[in-house]
Image (cartoon, rainbow over all chains, first blue to last red; front, top):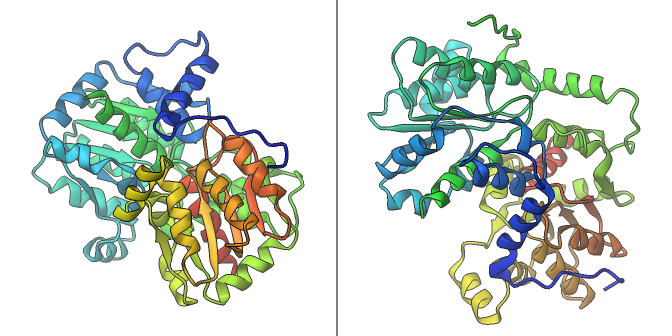
Length: 211
Length: 211
């Protein structure tokens, strides 16, 4: 095979071996105690060690999120990709499900009428759900801005906001808004980085910590 | 809003503004002519400028891929996330569809029997399709290794391999294998980086170049 040597790792051991390598390469970098599985899974998903520095956790967020999941909290995402990536079987074990309203016709219609984004209209629709909610936002800063407004207006009190949109327009600012909220548990990828893959992998990291 | 100032950009203009910023920040970095929309979309999807350096294009790959898509080529992915992220409406316009066999029961069964990964078994299943195929591999290096073998055995001749798995075990090597193939058009993210989001966004970049 062209002098290219493959490492011999059994299929079932690939993930464990990956986490070993990540742990080795992190060396003695300081991570917030209790958040290591989340940080390492973000690096596993992206091969980007920036996630060792840019993730911001509110105090006690991991315990609170796990508690909410154990009590059947549902997850709202802003992309079908995020929804596809979340381990829905594990979530269902505790009674939760994943919602993504981005492709809904009513959402498209309202967004058009109001001159806003579908992500904004999706958050309004989610606020109408009578459920414990975790928001996993990997794409649209406008979703975070709307969440901030709904919370300030007293119309929404999420169990957790995973604030990890990626990009260049209002991404940094929208995350700062979420971090400025008092009493709302959040996990934020400060700066421009993030994505639907990161949003899904943080949800999965929490679910896997429950086993 | 806590002194956080949002940039005023209309919903329909967010993407264009993002690409402007990316172009500005790339400055005079040299990209392979004709590949710019792909490189920039990868940066747009990840906020990671490493993609300005790590993407490797075989000669004429963009033209060949667009030609294949125009002639109804189908896309095979190794994750449901990748499948969710690809613009299936646009692909269908030209007669193509997206396949992901990773959750198929027969694939799980064969992988277990053969002590291999579902990604490997998925590639075998895809090789049985009687279609023009583009492989968009964003997760499993074992998928790339199997594609390499199938091609060497003369059992498969893909129109394009998008070789962008992410991670730490055999990821780098599997991409080198694909780049070593003669006569197989490929777009590879050299090194550890990539992901289902990158796989999907390269497919979409190609589709958007066709308009």
